[in-house]
Length: 257
Image (cartoon, rainbow, N blue to C red):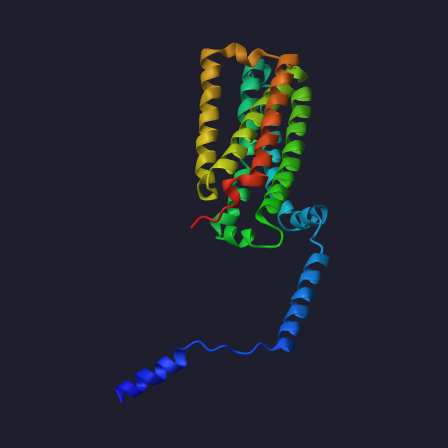
């Protein structure tokens, strides 16, 4: 009985040439060609429309938080307008440097949100791509930061004796340094550890500002000049390079298991 079963199994498992059905092959070919043509003709959503969509879903949340932060900053300027702190230009510039870095940190929770809720891997497989979503978030955050920084410039011009050139320098320079640092972390660090790196970076920059205030106070008595302008342009160029790196070959687009 066993030998009979073995022989039947061997016979069943032997490869036998099955005649090809040309009609089925032709039908499969036609279907595959149709799917390929449909995929070629399907247009991806344009980035402008995608950005508007993201503004509708997350933009108002980002701008609401930034609006609350701006309201708090305005209240600080109003309540301390006549104090000695707001009459001392070195204290004002130190305050602007710290404020510029803290404003940029509002971007971290919104960038990290997809990882916090376990959605990053899903975003990597969507039609929109995680990179387009990240760029949309950065644009939304950048618009809010632009409004905040310009409002602060107006407050400084009307509420303090600080020269407008110094205001621009001490808001723009730390902001660009922090922006380059965050973009570098996005491009070279796994997204799961991005928020930790951001906290370490912010603490490091704030400590440097405090040390400069104590050890080299002349740093906070500068005004915007050609040299500072070249430095800011250089930092802006580095930010663009890091952004390009993120879009092409960064750790952000890799699924971490």
